[in-house]
Length: 432
Image 1 (cartoon, rainbow, N blue to C red):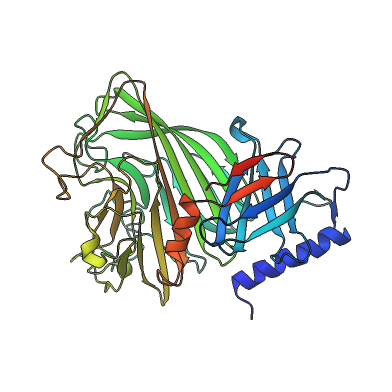
Image 2: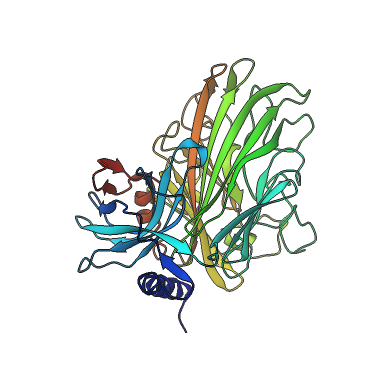
């Protein structure tokens, strides 16, 4: 029996044959002459690497194919073009390219007699956004399920098991789960000290980050995405900031999944100060079985591990600066993990990590004193009124341990994309 990666590769090869033969209800559009695409691996090898470049003139929106020139190796790649947000882009997942190698693809548009499957389906469901991968639930972006912030929940593995603790969102789902820290809901973005107010926990007089709408929702056969708008309110209702959140989900050929999260936060009505505190900024609560030592309220044995880019692992990972951190372990008899990547452009990169051995896992540039990396207030940061700051992260949800999931290589893919040359269109760097 083929695994999911083999099945997808077979699908791509079959699709290429279909594209050339113009059978099975699909036809190549021979009228459009599109640029060739040359990809070069200048500094390292690439494996299952999402690549997004500025779309060349004349490329239609929607679904396309990249077919490698004869004799260059490689397999046909799905491509997806989009003009959303006013910046035309072309995106594909580079399967394999060795360091120093290059490969040229023919970019072809495709005319579908019948609609193709959307590998990633993104749709609004009431106040929330739901994301399906291969017609199975991957995650939901829940905007009103919690008392003070939006969050992703559930997050599912390809095996249909949960990648985040179910309590307190589903309080009766598993009586063996831990019942500590009720504000640890799925995957979230918040901080415990913004203009002196706690937006992290759900204690009395907490702040509120409120979703006000969705600017864009897009499905596709390379990725799905959405943009959410958020306002930040003090306990008395005063508006102190807003943000725009860009989310992309990529299913990889080997069955792993990537979630890209980029937030542009703007101070309103005055400066916005992030205080030095360990509880922030972006992260998730993984299942108790992935913990090294689950909370005492749990009846589940923690058998997980934390691995870091610097090699300071498990309990030693807490409070250390790192390019990436990976949390992995057993989930219902199979090994799964999730790694968070810190973008090189982020404030105080590499950021420090609030990675607890009881299954909390967050990245935080503001907790320097709390993490033992400076005097009191060393992590304070003030954003001037009407100014913005951007935070960008990638999550890799993977099968297996850190090494087998090639987490270090995937981080290189994220922060150092390949060089992409479009014939007659100049040079463009790949990204994310």
